[in-house]
Length: 69
Image (cartoon, rainbow, N blue to C red; front, side):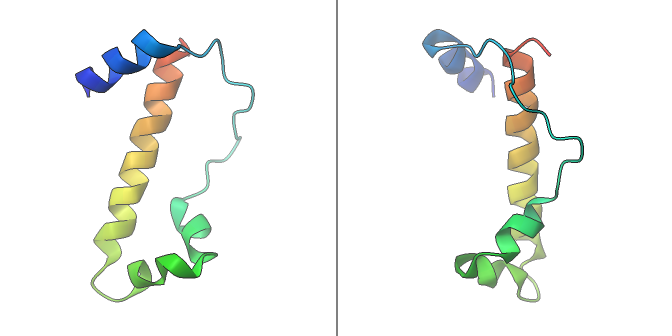
């Protein structure tokens, strides 16, 4: 993660976040709407959705950190 942070900081650091959702929706709601992710909802593949959610949460926290929030 440290390498990613250094790369992001060397390119361009956002000044702030223009929109913060009041209620963060789970990625599952977004993925359900798109047929290309149907395989993730099959029995035994729950881990895929969990991994995507972890990545999204990590990226959101990193963005907040870079913006100083």
